[in-house]
Structure formats: C-alpha cells, structure tokens
Length: 442
Image 1 (tube, rainbow, N blue to C red):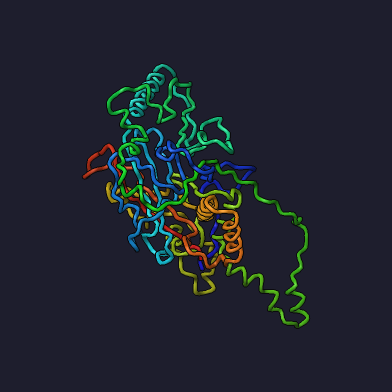
Image 2: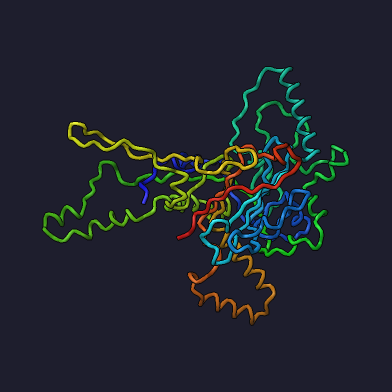
C-alpha cells in the first residue's frame, strides 16, 4: 500500500477557512428530462438519455461501442462545456458498458469531444474584442480578476432547486473587472443579432434536424434522460480539536506492559489503521459535503483520486528518494514523502500532439441515479400488484449480486489546446476521442 499522502496531492482548494468555494463545479441530477426540444438540444447537459450530437456530420456509431464486446454502450453523461472566449461550441460525451463481463477492462468507458464552429458567436466575440481594445486605448489599464473556472455560474446567480436554465452547464461569465461592455456575448444560443446563411446552421440544435430517422443513434440503448445541473463546491471549515493541548492522554498499552499482560489488543487500532486506504478516506470525506454529486468538473484542475491503486500511483507518483544512510555518522532525518500530481503518463493528443489535461470525473452516485431512473420508469408502467412484487423482490435481493457498472470514478483527460484538426488543418467541426482512466470499486 502506498504511504500516507500529504495535502499537496489532493485536488485544488483544500479544506481551509470557513465555507470555502473551490474551483470545482459539481454536476447534480435535476429531474426527468421530458421536453423534446431539450432532448434534442446539445446545449442541455444530461444524465443518461441519447446524445444530442453536436457535429453536423453524424459521427460513426462505433464511437459508442465497447472495445471489449463491441456492443453499443449507454450514454452516462453529456456535458455542454464550451471554452470561454472560443468560437467553438463544445460538448463532452461519456459512454460506459454495463455488461458484467466487460467490467474492469480498458475500453468499457469511452469519452468523446464534439466541436463545431459557431459563426454567430464568433462575430460577437470579434465585436467584444474590438470594444475592449477601444476602451483600453481610451483609459488606463484596469486590473483583472483571476480566472478560477471557465464555466463558473453567472455572477449574481443563485442555485434554484427547480431551475433548468441558470444551473445548466455552459453559462460562461466575464472574468474582466473592467467597465461594463454592452452586449457582451454571454449566451451562445443568442444568435439573432447576426444574420447569415451559415448562422442558422451553427445553431446548437442543428444535429437534431439533420439526423435521419433510421440512424443507428436513434436505436442505441439508453437510460431515462435526467437534467444535469451545476452548483459550486463549498467546503466546510475543518473541525477543531476539543482536547486541550495541556491534557494528558494515557495509553492503555503502557499499563498492560507494566502488569505483564497480553497487550496485542492494544495495538489493533494501529495495525488496522495500516489497512485503511487514506486516499479513499479522503475521497469519501470530500464527496460527503455534497453527496448527490454525479460529476466533478474542473478543466486543467486536479482530479480527486478514489483509492490508492495503480491509477493513483500513475497520477501521483512517489518521488525519487535518497538512499537511507548506513553508518551512524551519516545519520540524518528523512522528511516524509510527498506526492505531486503529474500527467506525464497520460498519452498526448493524437491529432495535435499537445498534452492532455484533466477535465472532469464521474462519481459513484451517478450509478445510483441511473439505476433509480430505470426502476422509476419501469414502475410507471406497472399495475399496483406488479409494483408490489417488484418492491418485495428488491428487498429480498442481495445488493452484492447486482450486475452492472462497478467503477469508483472515471477521469477524463482532454486535449490542452482543444484542437479541431482535419488532416493537420484547422476544421470547422470535429469529433475526437479523449483519454479515460478508471478507478474500479473494490
């Protein structure tokens, strides 16, 4: 088992202070998605359902196939996540195979990045840039606020338990603390101000109108669709010790040693603690602050590892250490080993050769949400007598015998440049597979 890990390996904004807002956005379920317009809209993030494909040219259906069994997989999440100040509409799609024979195998979870050039939004960005340049010439430089996350909620917005608009992924805010610029392009779907033949085709919902009825994407297996909304992550202050510093703590082992008794029991807590996975313990503690989270999003951030396995060692490698001294004269104190996050082992983007960075990770609660959604949908089709039998069967069933997805977390690493290339040339749209690392639930 790896040694205990210090604070510097954990994801950004550690638990310090009172109610600290981190740079992480949390995706939480927000009710069943029933509106057909939302189901077809790529700008509406979702759990389950079928993908609203962003590129105008329908991607190959093989994108959703498991690399082990070749069967089509279910869509776990679709995240609307355009990069701020980029003219490209952008969505992330993550599929997983639920067949028991494919669990714990590479290729049973796959992620794809869809990009499409938005002509209307590009025109707004150019207009915004021109205004900024004009203001810069007319006034002295203004100090800008740091950018913590390109997809933070709009300034002044408050989470709504029933809202489907202000909490959906993809609400970029302006990060410049400068005089207000009129008509800033906050919403990519607001394209009425620009008229051109291509502007209509750059609408986010274009794929819905171009997909033919007999497309294999229409027949893919799927979970019932659920809205995926966002909230910022807040961490409570760390608990304060209630034991005074001057207090004396007696060790029962000392007394037993004096009495000559068997003291093996006294060391059980210490020995058992060696078996405790400190990484998993930290994961559980962090996630418990918002237990309903299904996804953690922090582009170019640091993932939250699930357990101390090979994936953890890969992302947080143990640094090289000097050999221990042999002679007493060379005795010296060896500081505790500290791990640091590294993506050196993550394959580069095959299209542009740029490094990949962490973007998001799926959380264990997502599996529970998907399972519940299936039961709820099936229950609506049953009579009262049938529903009672289903409940009784569920109560008698051993949870350990359930088949399905067994991962603890799935981490997605995407191209740092967010490239959109076709034969090494800039393209207007693309469909690229990104790298996924899975930590399985033991």
